[in-house]
Length: 344
Ligand code: SAH
Image (cartoon, rainbow, N blue to C red; front, side, top):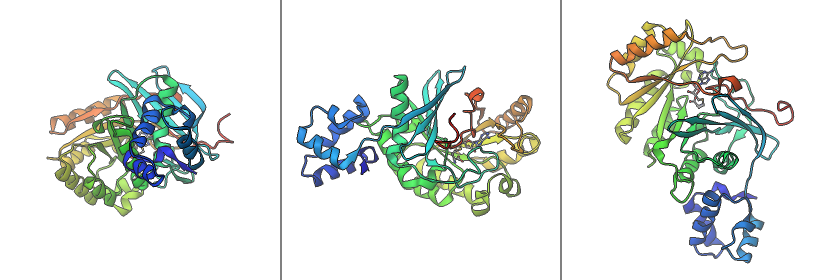
């Protein structure tokens, strides 16, 4: 059966029309799902009994189960969610002074194979549907009874490798009648799927694009991120420049600093040359060492020097505050858990 949360408002109107119903019913359903956050069709009390029965026989309302919840001393919560087919994914809630942010997963597993990331080495299983992406937000809001104001696609998976579902989920999240989270508060992070960056530039969505750059030479980036063999730095940065020209939106570059790998001032110099003149911002992340990983965290002193160099050379750079490190919920630490194996 189809998941009702997979539909954006326009498509749901279409569906209802096909069922011989008035399109405004779709708005009522959206209100029940995303405003009232009900979990059954029976709760949608302003729909006729007949329509509720019709909906029940054609659609599911996917409500994930919370398998496990870990809370960090900084307030960050990591959820292990049962996606109802025997698999589980991780989602993280981060509490900042400017509001709550959620880090959602876009796939079960990942194909990218970045050497520093904990999601690597785990078999790719499947894409998440739009409804399953949206459900992560609903579940966490319902569990905490707190509103989420920011969404980052930085959990497990490569969002642009699940392009249609991610863009459709953004529409549902952004729609004032859906979750009503402003596009400027939604970030899509990519390891650099160049053709999809061009495609995204054509969509009329104002969300933020983050690029996981992490290195300034192809030699080094090839070692860290296999995707660079397909789309090298020059092609990636050209796509970014074209994206900025087309959308007038600032791009955010992620750069995870690993000791003696990409963290010396020569790298900073190279980075400032590459990004010179671009409408962008650099997010410096102290790399999180993963189990058996070869990359170690750079020292705080080095990270600050790196930031200062960039700022002195015309590139706006900030150091990302690390949240949830004590519960393995910080950047790059999420793993797809096997429902049967890993949760005990
Ligand atoms: N596939 C997407 C989104 C998921 S990763 C992407 O590559 O952008 C989210 C961010 O965490 C990316 O910037 C990624 O490079 C970074 N990351 C992955 N592993 C990390 C680690 N061990 N330490 C710090 N950042 C990491």
